[in-house]
Image (cartoon, rainbow, N blue to C red; front, side, top):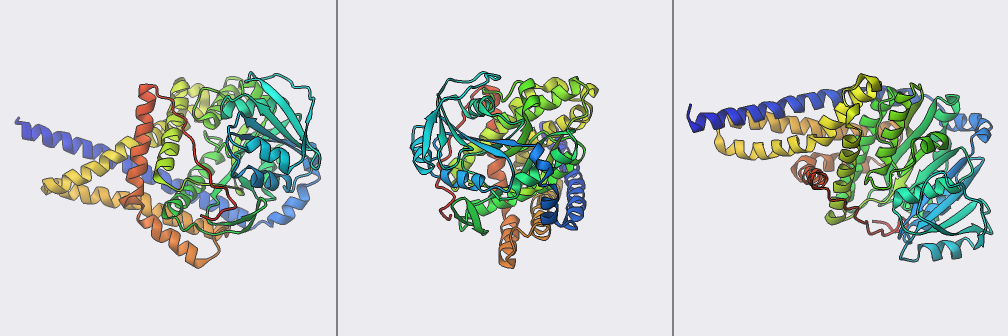
Length: 473
């Protein structure tokens, strides 16, 4: 057998792997999309405002501590606090944790909300960097500012948990804004389950381009930044398809740290947020799942598609690259740390379904898909059967990327009416059709960088330059 024949076999074998992977992924996503449609169809028949009123009395028994970790968030923290103070929820306390910011974050909060230094007993249930002082607002007594030595987001959240006094806590990013009913609705599964649901996560939407004043969304809209619009498409696909389906069977491993609620008791028992993990939100969910299975508990973690948290998205390639690289490295770190759960029947569906799915589709998928793009380019030059395989593979990429994205956009427009303008929906669909030509290859490359950083042991958190949600962009 000649060298040319060996090369042919290698290329055909590689093509077979990519094609098999793409078919499996498309079938999986098709099932997820169908399940999301079925779930959202049921919810669309409910009068959500009426349900909010029905359960408002019951919620008094479930007070929530809202924890906002803030490091150099001077651009958006005031808007975020205003939105949290106006939440439609009977009993909350708001704890802003200034994690050693080097900008004017602390000064702005103190001045804006007329805060005074207080003495408060702190239960050191989780180890954190030292707390320097605590402030309380004169005009909003339920608003606290915790000033502590820098220790990272996970450390700030753990400090907030130590300071908090309620049995449930909600973690919110310092640049995020909640709709007034978001906390009420994300707490409903916890309230209605009589303790069976111990954690929930809400839907994340990109705020760039919307009209935001004093922490309230006056008018939703799309950004003029092409990169931001592409991220809107990406968020719709990720949250509507994947998380709804996995949540239905208690298989979800990720609920966004930008907006999630946890039972404080279970978080403390799981050891709190891991300070040395880049993906502290996923790591906490995995630790809780592991704890539940080892204790043979029937508790659940759910994703709730209706409550919305608006957040600021990166507006340039450099910042987006750092974000995606960090996200993927955090994913791999958690999967590797808890690798013994993979295909382990002791951990039920989490071990037998969730972990294999995240390993194959989310972790190793970028390597295979990026290899597919490279294969298509090479195959077009080789001709013969390689040319035909390249065309088939390109069609699968179109189905996987553009079509699923377009369907997710239409599903979002139908179910929540978040983008009521026909022009905006049309623009999102048009942009989604371009994804496979530039955005998808870029994000795949960045995620592969995250894998490489994990292999090399490089823990680079990176920072995002905020412009503030009150500024349109």
